[in-house]
Image (cartoon, rainbow, N blue to C red; front, side):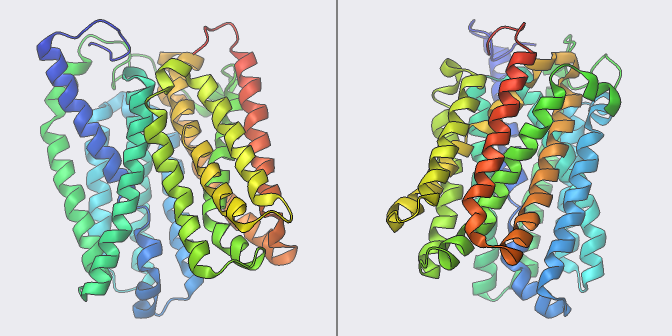
Length: 408
C-alpha cells in the first residue's frame, strides 16, 4: 500500500487505483451529508400529515443520534472484522433503505423504527471512513472531505425544497436522496476488490490484525481522557451555535428574522468554506496548530457576537468568524488520531471520539434551550465561550500528554 503522506511519487498503476478510491471516498462524504438536514427541512409538512406535534422531530433526532453513538462505539470491532470498504458499502445501503422507508412512512411510529437503521448506518460509515482517511491521507484531504460533507448537507435541503415547491411532496425528496444513496452503495460494492488491493500487505488496513479494544481499555490509553471532552465540546459548540444563532439575533439583538436566518446559514457556509481554505495550509501548519488557531478564531468570533453596544454588522459577521474557526478543528482532531494514539488504536479511538461528538451535538443544544427559556438567551455567547474554553484546555492537556511524540 502506498500512502499519500509520502513525498515520493506513486507508481502510475498504484496512483490510478488510489485516485479512484479517493474519489469514491469524496462521493461517500457527500452522501454522508445529504440526509442530515432533510428532517428539519421537511418536518413542518411531514408532521401535519402524520398528526404529530412540532416537538416530536426531537424524538426522531434523538433515536438517530442514539444509533450513531452505538455504531461508533462498535466501529473498531466491526471494521476490523469486515474491513472499511465492506462497512462503508453496507452502511450506505442501510441508510438508503431507511430513507426509502421514510419516503413511504405514513405514521410517526414508523419514522421512529426507521430512525434506528438510519442512525446505525450513518455512525458506522462515518467512523470507518474517517479512520481510513486519517491513516492514509494528508491533512488537506481530511479538510476537503469534510468540506464535501458540507456540500452534501447543503444539497439535501435544496432537493427537499424543490420537491415541496414543485408539488411532488416530501416523500419524493426522501426518495430521490435514497436513490442517490443506493447508486453509491452499488458503486461501493463493485469497488470492494479495489479496497482489498489497496490494503494488501498492510498492518493498518481496514481489517486490522490487532484485537478490538473494549471501552475501558480505550479510556486508559494515554491522552484519550482529554480528547473525548474536547471533541464533545467542539460538536456541542457547532450545533448550539447553528441552532440558536437566529433566535439570539432576533430576541437579544433585535435583528429582523430574515437577516438573522441568512446569517445563521452563513455560519455553516463559514465552516464549509473554511475547510476548503484550510486544505491549502493544513499540511504546512500541522494538526495541532490548526486546532489551536481554529479555537482562537472561534473565541474572537464569540467576542464579536457578545460585545455590548457593538454595531449589528460586527455581531452578524462574528457568526461567520465562529464558523471559520470551527472549520479546521474537527478534521484536524480526526487526522491527528493515529499520530497521537498509534495506528493500531486509531479505529477504536476514532469511534469513541465520534460517539463523544454525537453526544455533545445531541445533548448541549437542548440544554441551552432550557437555559434560554428559564434564564435568558443573552447567555448564548457565554455558553459558546465556555465550550471553546473547554476545547482549548483539553487539547492543550492532550498535547502535553503525548509530548513524547513528534509535533504533528
